[in-house]
Length: 81
Image 1 (cartoon, rainbow, N blue to C red):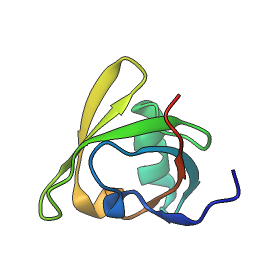
Image 2: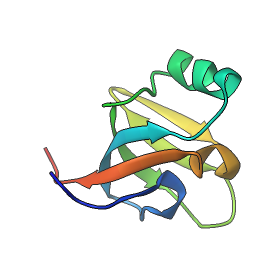
Image 3: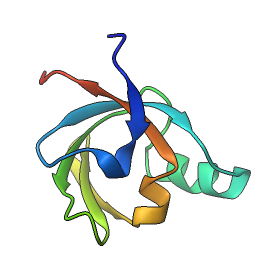
Image 4: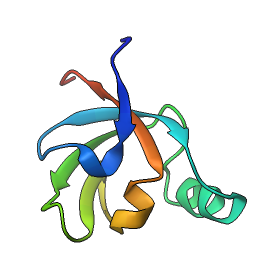
């Protein structure tokens, strides 16, 4: 890998990424963990219109997350598996 790390909210539709850091407090980190988003989680961007919530694919499921939350999840772009 070795790519740059950026907030999830900045990724474009169709991109895959791996979670590298959660820049959040304990409560948000717990909530993200319950949603299956922890360090090392691989995800894909399904919808990101740069103004509202994002829809991401994690494993076999899809999640909608708010933009504020997405800006606290730092990811590294990954190539398609």
